[in-house]
Length: 112
Length: 109
Image (cartoon, rainbow over all chains, first blue to last red; front, side):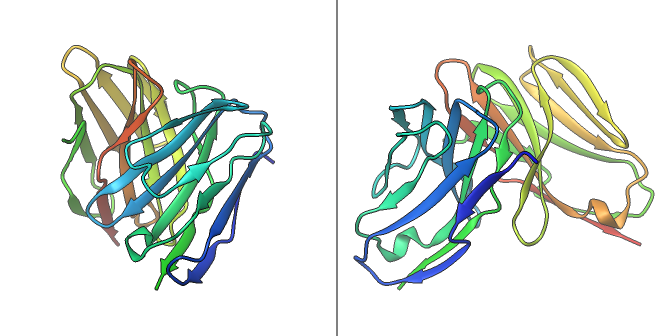
């Protein structure tokens, strides 16, 4: 079954404590991306990757890092989380930007 | 800046009604996507369009590239269609996605 898997699904953490949200896809997709969704603002792109070792900033990259060492994995790293990073995060993949997007189930992150 | 605008923001319909959700965009695009998000958060891709019209069951999506406008139609609406519908575009100048803020649809039995 085609899947994008994110973990953890729910997390409450404290300000400054580094965390990583993992994302894995089983469709051999080149394109992967991270988004955050906030009320009234909709989905906003954080980072994207066109392929292994190729990453680029989206609209709201501040406070986030990513890496793409393997095609299937695209983790999102918050080195020093702050309360304004409390949000619902989605990972997604596709075989190209002009093709169907597959989303993970979302990760609810609360930073206190 | 809002590269993608959707209307209406909220929509309530009686079961069986014909529904239209509109999307306008201001950037050059390589593709336009309609997404569905149910309560609980999961997002599913309904359509990907670069021209013309697509139909899947009771859902129809159209796009007019010249006018930079797309519509999502739902025929014979049903309570299970209640969800947030999101329009997204892929910019043709890069590899970024831009999203509308979504249309919250409630279909009443």
